[in-house]
Length: 377
Ligand code: PMP
Image (tube, rainbow, N blue to C red; front, side, top):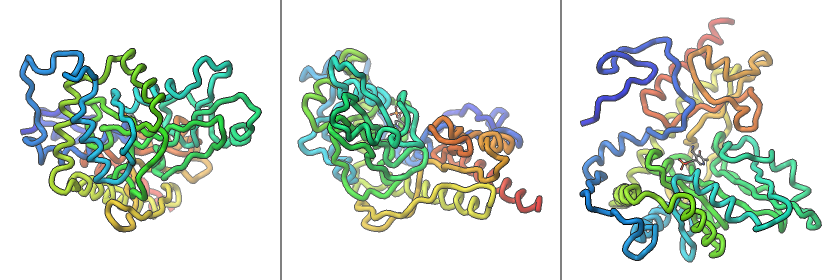
């Protein structure tokens, strides 16, 4: 059975069943607990038990810090989904995408270079790095071959916060890219083609929802970059916890069992239903709008897929609502201020990946706001 929960902000009482009507619904965190029901249905097959003597060593039997069996399973997962080329590529593990993004920046920064590289991204961007601003500011200096400035462009696709599929913007000899493909899974997007970039990063957090296991991986073309990332990993944490690797292996076995589609079918259905409900409600409003997402052909499902983004990128349209976060706060909705993504405060990111209860409450509050807009006319 499920353990007794800690009540969230909207419930109280011994079994968390007393609803507090003026609580703030948390649409801030991107904690992907929407997948919990899938794992509850596969509780036994995904469970691990470890004896006290097991996996005590620093290294695996072959002397490495990385489970070869897990690596093979990761390749299988990508082959089934068709979202990344892994043949002839190097794979490295990290404590979540977060650690890998840092390792990647280190590994591709020119050694001993006099001018430090600029790390850039296109707005709105997920602020997982100290960016030197929007890519558009640097377009001309990147193609200028006489410039000694080096660039690293982060490409997050689908993008956090707005769910758009993205391509690199900067071009030129001094530009290197890091593709953060955390959301490039069938729950959140169509999969038009396998990614085949120099350096891509994925995370278990958004694939299976196990954000707390702190596990991610990078797929790398160039062996020298791979070696430098390995060095970074061994100096910073001496690899990823062996317990985590064991748990991830067990989870991925469930993900690929049968035809390897069940988790994605559940994930897509859940996210698509949520987006349909939320965008339909907002479409009745003149005060608020959400991003437009075009349907794309998905090679995984063999059809054109409707949107199912992880986040709503909500805009307050009225002149006087320029602090959209505050407008929502007053309606008991906690989002994340657009300015944190390098955008205007007219925007707010709303997380749609949390539990069903949480989403239902968010939807109810949005519907109430939209109804009030008409009642006040
Ligand atoms: N990249 C993006 C685009 C994300 O949204 C997140 C998590 N919200 C991360 C990286 C970090 O993921 P992890 O949990 O693997 O550190």
